[in-house]
Image 1 (tube, one colour):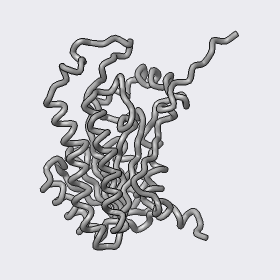
Image 2 (image 1 turned 30 degrees about the horizontal axis):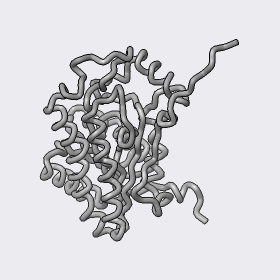
Image 3 (image 1 turned 90 degrees about the horizontal axis):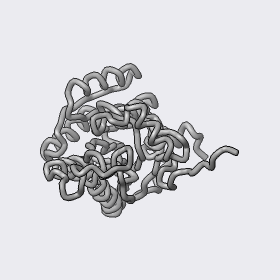
Length: 278
């Protein structure tokens, strides 16, 4: 029987993380590097990517970077190919890059601002969200597959969302539509690629404090509001996803594909109603 340090080992792996400059992507890259993987980091923001790479480099492992707009299929392929060549292998891809679809139809007070009505959603927002959250993920997976197939297999991990399978009130409809597409993409890719020993799984977080959506979840009042509706009593952080990332990149998850790990503090269970004291 393997020891736990062998079962969950990612040491020596070649790992590519998209959207790696901050938030969930950076947290994933950090835990991979801390556990002796070699990293290829992709992001559209060059300065933030350089800063992230400097922080990751403190672990002493190989860190390569590539600035790319992954909604451009040619750029996505070029980025994955270049990082694969520099790392010498591609064992795990974290397709994490994503954007917000703006606020939902209710505001924090439960009101319905007219500007947020369904018929008023800006088509430019819908176009951008679908390109980043669905098309770019699709292209990134496509780019990774030939390298993994040639190597005899690999792990693909997509950052999805609990919005992939539930309606929302404070999350924009364009985002919900995109994550629904992402969820089905994970299952379809998993089905098609299983014969190549390539697993495709998703991490589906609830509200997480990141810079997405202009960083609105950094606001303390918003965090407290979310916490009140979360059974575990607090909003999530990128570090809360690191354990799942290690699991899905390691041999511990080798017989798991087309699945999602929900990390939402119990949000999808519904809010906990605490009766008044006395």
